Image 1 (cartoon, rainbow, N blue to C red):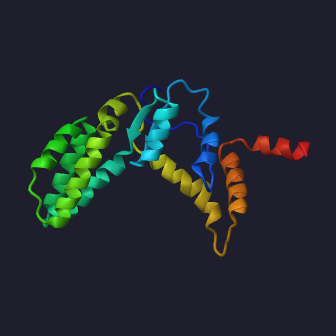
Image 2 (image 1 turned 45 degrees about the horizontal axis):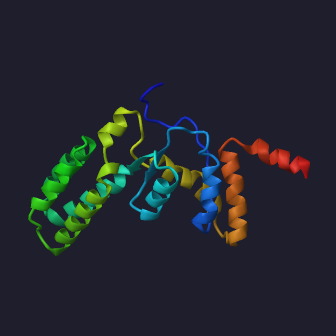
Image 3 (image 1 turned 120 degrees about the horizontal axis):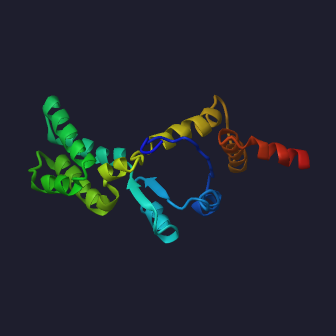
Length: 201
């Protein structure tokens, strides 16, 4: 179904350690996709990797990381909780209407209530300026794309933490990678590959 904004199939990969070993695991699953969409937070190394390896990919800044910058500013800026909620809702809506430039302009002309608000405002402005091209949320939604990394966060809990954080467990790097890899195959619906390896052995 077109424009449904939901995941219908997931393939999971995991690695504890260097990203140089994680990327090959991930990239082998990306080969067959012509249209690539990358959702990430503000970490520069992620975007540098995307731009170097997949220059045609659509880059989306996770909406909730963008919203977080407004939340932090509004928490310091408003003493009245109701005014804070109204302001936050209004400006988050602007972000969802592809009006990041307008939000930046409003922040620039807003007088900070205190030093913490001033610092939070400066960080929000710089963050939005840096990622403005990745914050066209209405455009993404209209194309049927996700704008948040919620499913990824949920998968981290379901695929890894649910198994790896049981009471009393202690892991070596080698051990945690081995179990994490098995979990990824299991949750990706690819357990038949593990069965074939075991039978061949």
